[in-house]
Length: 208
Image (cartoon, rainbow, N blue to C red; front, side, top):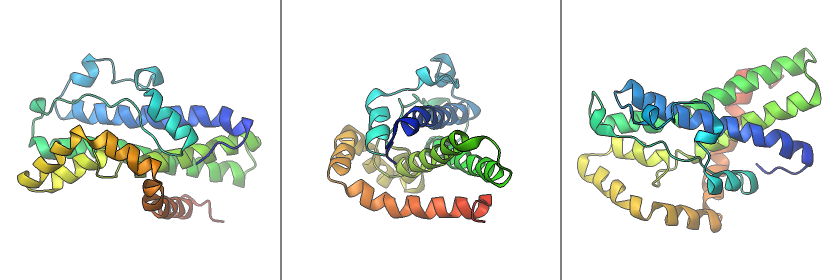
């Protein structure tokens, strides 16, 4: 998603902050539920956007349409369950939170449109909130470290396969930036984003 006008920019930035903040909060909350107090101890178990911002990831989300927040630190040795499965649940929590937020924003948008509530600015904001949450959720499910999809993939693979995924963490950021710069990421996740948006539109009642 690109911010093509001043109103979109002014409304898009808070939409981005909400998407990023809830994403990282969900990671920390899930880890805390599983027994890890690290996020809470570091002040990351909060909905304050300043605690979660990553400058590069936020700028990329504004100018390129996909990005990330500052990752929440997790210590799986605290988990009260299998560590790989725990990391998979923590990894899933952020994208799932984004997709839930996107659906709720879409439901609210259809109510606003159906009953003529809120005006064009409110509708634009909710549109952006839907879009950015879908983009952030889908993008982070790519199985390349440090994205959440790598944790999910490692949790699904046998230990030997998971070890390979973890070894990629030293090069993950470089690989990810190369995929973004070459446009490969956009070609991969573009159709998925469109599909998810279409499903949210249908199930939220926006398609009327």
